[in-house]
Length: 170
Image 1 (tube, helix red, strand yellow):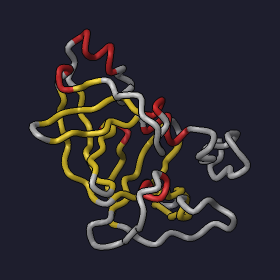
Image 2: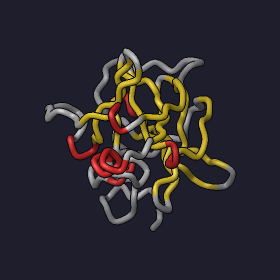
Image 3: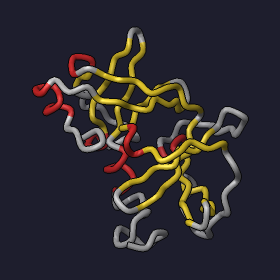
């Protein structure tokens, strides 16, 4: 699903979808625009003891404590560098606010159903259940993530009740 629209259903109903495209390493990804609250420049979060490497810590965002996940580390994309292009995408997922660090944000893309293809079954650091498919825009290919499923996964431990890392209250 991309912000509540199942890609297969969207194809049959001829519904366009809007995604925010961003870069992680050499690849471009897309997430449903309706999950995005804001985009911020990178700032060093407060580290949490015994947290996984990819969970950088938390930020105080206007009085709300927000866990910050570095997606490059989460996807095992090698050396991570924080520079002026590094940004944090603040997501609203259910009743939770989560930040994700990416290499940069590209643009908002509208994809017609014929531009979205099912993702092939591949091994790797991204669970196939967290992929919606592949979107094509000209010569660009976007890996479409089910960011809600990814962030709510038990192994992420970001939502109360999913693991011992319970950072967010239910």
